[in-house]
Image 1: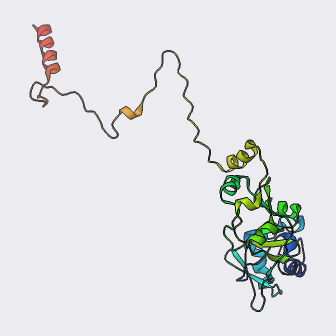
Image 2: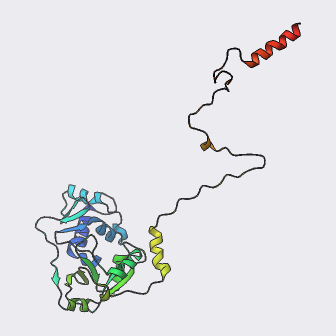
Image 3: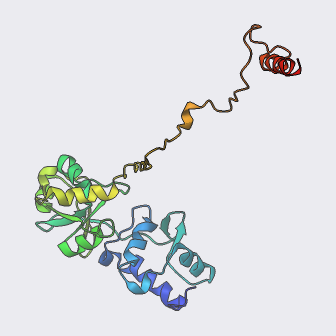
Length: 257
């Protein structure tokens, strides 16, 4: 266990954050009693004293026999047997407006299709812009805050659940129930550019010097070895005692005579 905090203190802190008042951190449990570990981890990063916590610390607390109300199963936190998530209460008269922060890269999707949960059953909405921005900054350093006409949506039939003071959960929300701020194209493009793949860098050309040349190895057949030139006088077969030998013998005869 990291020496920054006493294990018992860490167990109590994590239990409070995850179970006793998760809404204060914009966290909520799914109806099956699970929560993605990454969302819990992102919330921990907001507190400098808890940034060291990793999955291994959760397992170590359980190994030490310290009581925590949840376990880690793969990439999910799961409430232990006998515990149930905070009861979701449908709200008949929600606030006039609620807030949700999105990544800059999702702005064009929201403009066309509205808001919708991605990997979880519900989408969190906050009663205060500040909380929505806190949640959004866990995914994007400069999130875009969308306003939801919550009372108008409820009148149209959208079920809005309250998951704690200041935190609400909904399903898909249509575009005409949203107030989407005007965003400069360069700001929206900034989020896309951050996730775009960089084009491959061109290889620099080697400098050419006067009186020199560069060899192109692609012109050479790989593994092909050229043998010595053959005498074609006999159909491509080399003759015994080639022409250069006959010429040499002729020169010797002249000198000897």
